[in-house]
Image: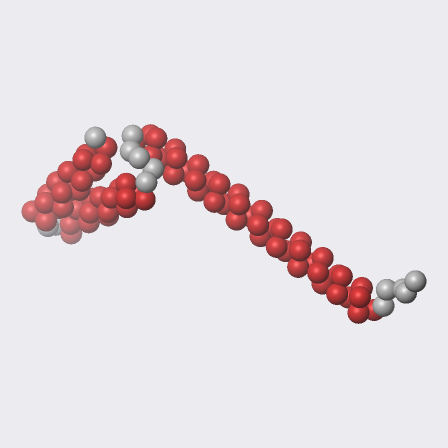
Length: 97
């Protein structure tokens, strides 16, 4: 029976380290994507919308337009703020119906 040599032990150690790193990263990303999925489920359930990619994209676009309306009001552009806010409210109300 042959004893394990230096290079066998070194390879085994490096393999164990790589395996530990991969399992650690897998655990982190699994928990991260699980938390992200739970966040999306809670958000869509509370808003009463579907959890599809299209619904989330429309929600983000509506919120960005609403933020643009708020920024227009803060800059002093009353007409632009009203127009952007009304468009955003139409988009968001259509989404939540």
